[in-house]
Amino acid sequence: MNIHIKTERLIIRDLTTQDLDGMFALDSNPEVHRYLGKKPIKNKAEALQYINDVQKQYAERSIGRWAVELKDTGEFIGWCGFRLYNDYTFNNHINFYDIGYRLRQEFWGKGYATEASKACLQYAWDVLKLDTIYGITERNNEASHRVLLKIGLNYVEDFYYDPENMQLRWYQLKNPN
Image 1 (cartoon, one colour):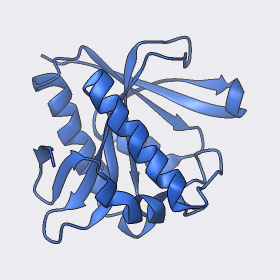
Image 2 (cartoon, one colour; image 1 turned 60 degrees about the horizontal axis):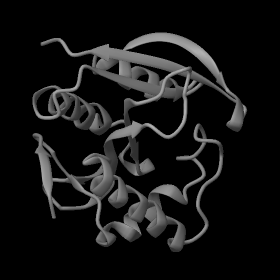
Image 3 (cartoon, helix red, strand yellow; image 1 turned 90 degrees about the vertical axis):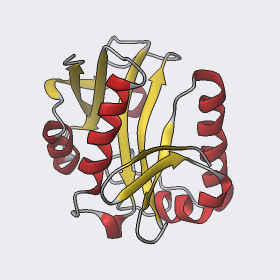
């Protein structure tokens, strides 16, 4: 297991097949998918496919979403990290790094998304040497809007994402160094 970041309460590491049950608990919850197109997964095979896709991103792009676990217990609570969008366009952008996070519902409202995302941003500047990080949320997802603002991203504009028929928000942050 490749650990990338440790914070006060969290360990941020590569996703593995050992995270299968946690990923299924996360992505089968309709409330978690409320602002993600309302398409929760229905079986563990779909969760395994997601893990395999992220591991492929690790191999091909040296980046991907990472598992987030509680330091005290080792419990999988969700994921956080980056995705390189170089295969399709969002808001007239291609070849950009998006910061994202998704937590199991029972871990919402405890500051974990903010803590993990702040640590990931620091990793983006110090280790990956990225120039700009972008963020995307569904327009009505106020909790994610607040997290992105708390970690320093700047709201830029709303845009319409046609393939999913969704109104989204666009954020960005330039490397402060």
